[in-house]
Image (tube, rainbow, N blue to C red; front, side, top):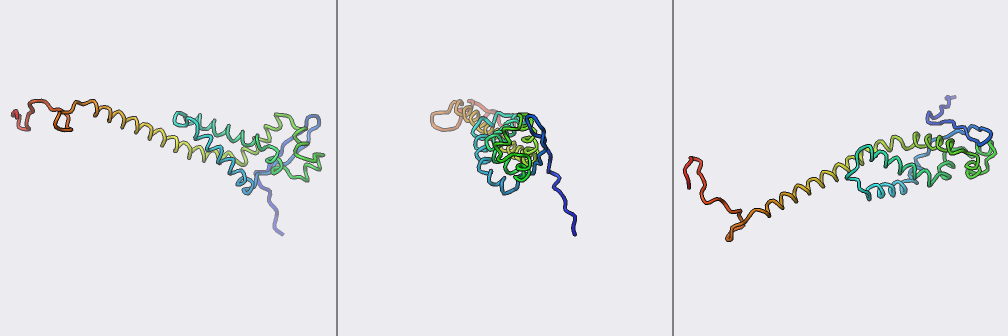
Length: 182
């Protein structure tokens, strides 16, 4: 009979306001993460609606991490329901996720949130950061190109034009390649 292997992403977390209980934190399934795809899409819209062209790479990282923390916070009961086995919750006297939340300190919840983030989103954020930095650089480059074009256009507009042509006015005399005046 083949030996069963446990997922290395499975972690343990101690919870309890008075008496500590150990819960197993499982990684989120791809199906559940896809259900959150709409929320992630909203996060990206939020990200790009801001002033991304002026952000440094560190600021992009901080903003992305903050958006994912916000996503987890807004969906904490649902996320916890997917990362903790209901049988284990019942065995630890938690009938619902809400009951669990009533027996979890902020630090313990942050620890669980960190586990969920590390197991499910950390690599995604790193890849997303690279992708978004490329888009930010494109926006910055496009903006720089537009500024250069506007300045070049303004310089051309500033040159005086002769009355009968659209060519800039040239000096009265010019020197040929041989050095004689024409």
